[in-house]
Length: 358
Ligand code: SAH
Ligand code: SF4
Image (cartoon, rainbow, N blue to C red; front, side, top):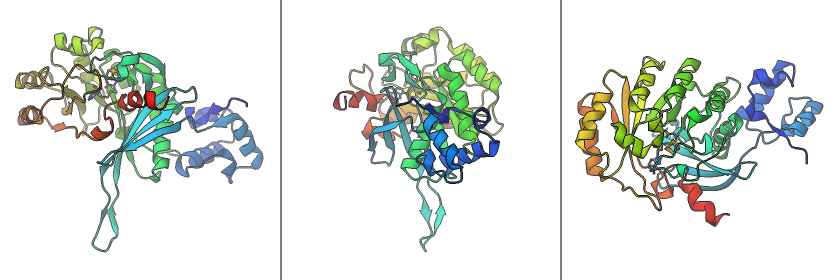
C-alpha cells in the first residue's frame, strides 16, 4: 500500500499549496478537528474527487491506542503506538467535575488538562526519570503531538469547543524538539481547528536556557514551566546532568527575559525527593532564587519506579516546605498525585507494558 502523509503535520497556509481554493482547506480542518471525522471519504461537503485524492495521499491517524488505564481519580493514561512501532504516553486529567443545579441542568462544564509527549525517550538523562533510561529514540513530528490531543478528545467525546489545557510534560524534552513543538502549538491554536489558545499551553523544560530564549523570541504566548528540582548547581548537576551545560544562573536569566502575560506566572516545578532536597533550608534557598521573578511553585512528590534509587518524601515534610514558600508570598501547590495508582510519572506506563504487550 502507498505510504500516505500525516495531514496533521500541516498548518492551513502550508496545505494551500496542495489543496485549493483555501476554503477547502478550512473545511478539511473543520472536519478533522471540529467534527471529529474518521476518514476523508465521509467529508461530504467536499467534492468526491477531492475526497478520493485526499484519501490516496493523506491520513490523520498516526496513533494507535495500545492500552489505556483509568485511575481512581478519573485520570486516564494512554499508551500509543506510532506508525514506526515506537510507543509514547499521554494522560487526560480531569481537573474539575461538571456541575448540575437541583433541577439537573448543567451549570458548569468539566475541565480537563491533557499531558502530551514531545519525543520518544529523552537525552537529558535526569537520574530520577524513567523516560531518560533508554536515551532519545526520536523527535515527534508536530502532527504526532497534535494527534495525541485529537485522539484523546475524540476518544472521550469531549466536544471540540470545550477548552482543554495542554501541558508538554509527558515523555521527552519539548525544547529539544522546539521546531515541531512550536508548530504543534500553532496548529492546536488555529481557529479552524481545536482553538486551544497558547495561553492554555504550558511548555515544561529541564532548563535549556538557549532554547528558552528562542521560544521567547517566537512570541507565541505560551506559558513556561521550569523543572528546577534543586537550588544549587552541585545537587542539580547530580540530579539533572543537563545542568552542566545550563546552570541555574543561566536558566534564571533566560526566565527573566521570557515574555509573559502580565497576569501570568512562570511555574517552577520542584520534585521533592526524600532526604535529598526536601528540607526547609532548601525552601529558603528556593525563595532567594525566585526573588524578583513572577513565579509560582508546584511541588511534585517523587514517584518511585522499579530500580529507582530515590524515595518518596513524606507528606508532612512536603506540607512544611509548601507552608514556608507560601509564607513568603509565593503561590505554592503540591501536585496531586493524579494517576498514582496507574503509574503516574512519564515513561512508567510504557516501561510496565513493554514486556506484557511486546
Ligand atoms: N522534559 C520536560 C518535560 C517532561 S518531564 C521536563 O523535564 O520538564 C515532566 C515532569 O515530570 C518534570 O518536572 C519531571 O521532573 C517530572 N518527573 C520525571 N520523573 C518523575 C518521577 N519519577 N516522579 C515524579 N515526577 C517526575
Ligand atoms: Fe527528559 Fe524531563 Fe525526564 Fe529529564 S525529567 S529525562 S528532561 S523527560
